[in-house]
Length: 332
Image (cartoon, rainbow, N blue to C red; front, top):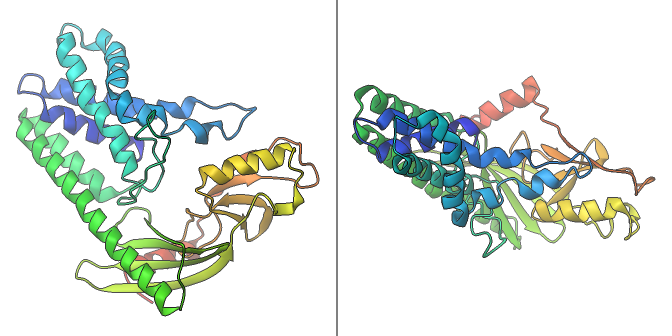
């Protein structure tokens, strides 16, 4: 989730464990601890552009790391909170805040190593977008009321509403998945995998990927609040396989990095439609029916041992923006 919402949820969770005397300090400690988990983005190297993908949402987001993460947060907070809170209360609020970070990120469509070190599986429930204004608004209102009234019951209500919203997202996910599977059946296809992911800022419009071998059908599925559904047909594309792409030498740096990125992208790599040497993650695009990936690596097949570049390409034209709004509102 975006770091602001991470902090909001951490603050509200900590407030729910506070009392009238320390509910405001609880919000501060919980927010700081929740945001600390995302400090893993600082693990990066110019010599290894993919290192940030390897460690983002990794050990710092694992359930087993929560007590350690809370301890680190408490140590950092102690110079500020000493004299206002006991060490025990400081750690308690940091624990409540830090505990929300990994679980919330697992609710998005980005993989989280929630079970590390017991499992290296990347968990992504895909029930809420990385940025969702309504979800954030629920937390802001409950945080503000609890802050003003110094009453933790408002924070409890906020936590309950936030969990309810995530539950609604899970229901919407299942509805979108059912529509996507039915669409594949209507086309006479039996895909190996069907994935649906929420689009930015809502749980109504979903990106659907029906994967069959190296072929992927990309569509948008809208599941309305009143049971209505609508499909916006997209296109079909071919996945990139490191073993065959551009006949890269197996001992080359480019082949090794492409294999790494292949794993990080859940084996769903695609060439950019306007730049065949830009290989990106097909799971994410500006439009739910689009092929152009949001991020990827730049390779030069003629120089397979040259360092790669990992870049983002968030190109949103007015036409694309209008099309997204039309699909979100269920218009033609």
